[in-house]
Every structure is written in C-alpha cells, then in structure tokens.
Image (cartoon, rainbow over all chains, first blue to last red; front, top):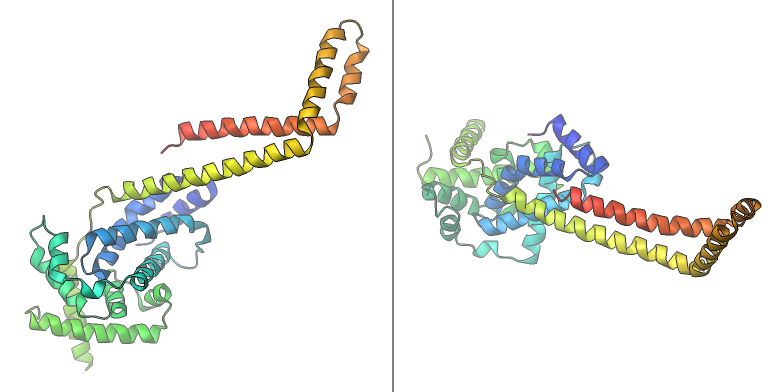
Length: 180
Length: 126
C-alpha cells in the first residue's frame, strides 16, 4: 500500500506547498480509509464520509509532523483511529445503530445488500477495539506491529483482541452457513 | 487448538475477501480538496491581515507620514533646482537617511505582497 512515491508526494506538499500532490494521496487512500470508517460505524455511509474527510483534513494540517519512521498509510490510519474514537467519545451512537437499516441505507442502490448486511452484522457482534483490530488485520491486511503502532496498544493485547474477535466472528459465520 | 485457529483464520480471510471491495471515489476527493482550499484561503487571509497590520503599525510608529512628506518635498525641490545646480544631486542622496529608506521598504513590501497575493490567487486556485 505504501510506496516511495508517497514520500515524494509528501515532500512536494511540505517543501513546495503543492496541494495537487495531496490530492493524489487522497485519491490513493480514500478507499481504505472510507472502508475503515464504514466497518467501524457498521455501515453508516454519511458519517463514514464525514469522518474520512476529517481524517484527510487533519492529515493535511499535520503533514509536516509526519516522520518517515512509519509508512504514510500507518500514519493515516492512526489519525483515522483517533478521529473515530474521538467521535465515539463525543457521541455514543453506534451501539444503537440498527445494522440492517445501516446496510440498507448504504447499499440501497446495489444488489449485494445481503452480503454487506452479513459483514456489518458480524462486525456488530464485536467490541469496538476488537472490530478495529479484526478489520485492520483481515480486511486491510496489516501486520500486528502496524496495528500496534496505529492503536498505541501493546502487540500482546492486539493479539488477544484479534483472537477474541476471531472466535466471535467465526462462530457467527458458522451459524450463518459460511463454513466450507 | 492450533488447527482450529488456522481454520478460523482461513474462514475470516475468505469471508472478508469475498465481501469487501474498493470504494469508488464519486467526488469524495474533490470535496476534501475544496475544504482544504477554503482553509488555506482563510489562513492566507489571516496572515495577510497580520502582515499588513504590522506594516501599517510600523509605518506610523516610525513617523512614516512625516518622513514621506519630507521625501516628497525634497524630491520636489530637487526637480525644481536640479537643472540649476548639479551638486544638489549629491546633497539629496546624503539626506536619504536610513529612516526614509526603511519607510520605502515597508511600503514597497506591502505593494509587492499585494501583487504576489493577487498573482497567487489568480494562478493557483487549483
């Protein structure tokens, strides 16, 4: 996901104040970041897009603080993670979200309502932190080390969250006929 | 236990692989860039006001109006008398002291700043 090209784009933004370089980064990372929020909010599309926008704006404002020790995507996920948990702290709405309604709203124009419904329903059974870890591990394919860097949680705890989340997810999937 | 773990791992991977897809941009990037542009313009304006305010303050604190009146009266005298006595040219140069030069720099800076800002706004809207 990350490439040396990202560093060149960041240099252009920081040194030459070239906004078009940031536009390239937004286009490149909009899908994983919006997907991150979609899964975290179990399918609330408008809220996801608002949070994703906030993430990119914060990234732009703080891009001079980006140190190249981590990849740009890890840094961006870190901001997204903070934006999401700030939102959770400020308004506890997600527990009240009706999964079917959220999925319906999101995929009203698509044919795969049922499959997306299953994704959100399966994720809804997890605690927020388990959902974050499972998503980053299995959907975004990040390493435990990267997830620990994003969440600032020790690697051992990440493994525990993933393990617990995985058991819950597997149980749900088996009950819904997804086992091969 | 390990086998079970592996199976669950595979189950989750295949489930997410078949259920997740790329999200189309559909104008999202454009919206983000519009917001960033608005913030940049606001910050630019703020700096503009601060810079010009500082220049104006310095101008009055350093008695700029008086210096300008002096400068213009001396220039007027110079043009009036220059053809009569060429030694006046050296006298005027000597009288252009550092305060006057400073005022010229301040006013020149403001004009250059305004020009640069104007050019920036007309060329880098996107």
